[in-house]
Amino acid sequence: MKVVSKLPPPSIDMSLLLTEAQRRESRLIDRLRSLVEIESPSSDKEAVDRALTSFAEWAQAAGGTIRRHKHRQYGDSLEVRFSGSSSREKPILLLGHLDTVWDHGTIVHMPWRATKYIIAGPGVLDMKSGVMMALTAVEMLQDLHLLHRPVIILLHGDEEIGSPASRKVTEAVASRCSSVYVLEPAQGDEGAYKTARKAVGMYRLAVHGTAAHSGVDFERGHSAIIELARQIETLSDFTDLSRGITVNPGLIGGGTRSNVIAAEAWAEIDVRLERQRDVTTLDRKFKKLRSQDKFCKLELTGGINRPPMERTTGTIALFRRAKELASRMNIELEEAATGGGSDGNFTSALGVPTLDGMGAVGSGAHAIHEHLQRKHIAPRLALLAAMLI
Image (cartoon, rainbow, N blue to C red; front, side, top):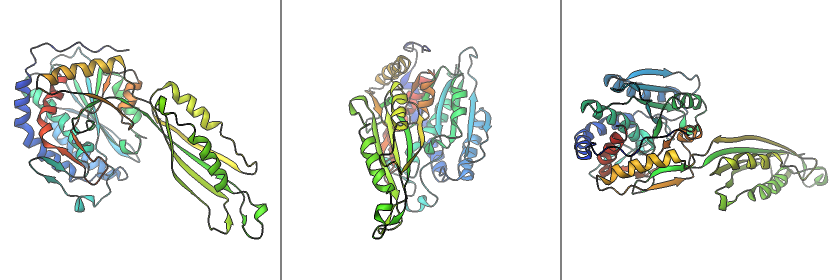
């Protein structure tokens, strides 16, 4: 396990960082609006790439060295390296994404809105605000001559759909870093940092039966729907709340007409697990499923997409450092675990200390009321900058 540094020395002036963050808040918000109004659904590579290009221009103007990882089907990955005054230390990785769950046209009925208290718009919380916090924190430290260690900002265009193209990039870059800070939204209204995330999996169970007329040849049919129902009863027992394991057949389909015994049926099953040691055990259970009707055939695909981000000693050390720094601004920083996944799951599984939820504070991610709380922008920006010193 890699070791992170102990608590930072008292020389870190949090009041200076907070004042500087407050001074830069207006510019951060202006840039954030530009990013939000570049709609970037995961399904549209060109749109996501436009958002990445916009960010790349700002990062390059700030002195970042740009490397673009091209992906054929999905949005590209953007790697930006900032050299600190000390080249001996491993870099810190600031990890995020610019794709969103929102389709084109969402900005029309869910427009950018900034008031004294909140800022709203598609993707503003998850996670374009965190992306802008990352760049602004680096710029702050540069101007204050406090950027001593190298920093890499790594942004992807396919995180919301499971990171099919970018995972290898994340793992390759993170393996060269001392720690990873994930700029996903903080947890809850008080903005807890995330020190654990569940593994995420998706299985698809298809049943192939035999069609027949339900009135004329009922006994000749073998219903895929009935067999699927039996299988759902079985796999629902895989849930074990005491171990943080949930198995949810959230989407099902099958059949053609009510007077036809169904030849086909299927279910998509969401899986969440807290511990890596349970991943193999649960996967075995799925693969041991057998049809109760010998004339029906089961076809299982899918599996675990993201490993769990477990609460490791390295992550705990990072959180304690953040908590101590936050206390200097009279912020009582808490930690939380969540069932949702992020690219931080990949970096944590590599053994690199990873702290998540270091972005904006708000609510409504993936919902029409998505927004961030404006009062938290400057303090969280100052805290992020301090964590880079």
